[in-house]
Length: 241
Image (cartoon, rainbow, N blue to C red; front, side, top):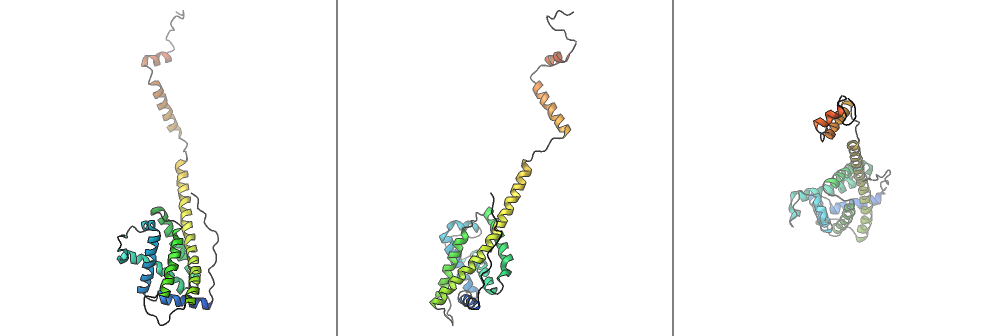
């Protein structure tokens, strides 16, 4: 299978100061500490697994028995996802610095595609579940805040978060496609090498020819072979003395 790797990628959105402040305000509401980050992450992953149950195959180390949110593996995975969002907020002035990290993350998902059945469209599910829960916690934070967001601020923040997440996912996808392209190229190279026919050496050819002759002669008796090869054998009814 051939995979197209994008040669260009859209630039990061250039947030102005007001937009940066809205994003930072929203993060102070939904991810100010580890407890809030865990809540955002676990609720998002729970929603992803409910919307797309086959995505659970990507996490064989988790047990899905209705109590998965209490497991260390589930919380750890949820935190890893939220930490990507946290890094984006911290780097709003220099989002390009995240390119390498996101590319590597995409390559790791490329490995999941072959080992666990990862599908590219999972990112669309991830995006929508993330947006839904960001809005939920902006509107109903798990801790009382000195500064609440107005409905207009929440709406604006959601628009900005969607742009940010799309930029993040696009760069992850590039790494993902690169990994798949490299795997496809490696597979084609190996297959070509395996299918290439090597010309036999002279002694191999002579040996195989000898074996073939012996096999073809095995159906004849020794006397028949000798009579064929003996030049002094007289022919019957030839009239020769």
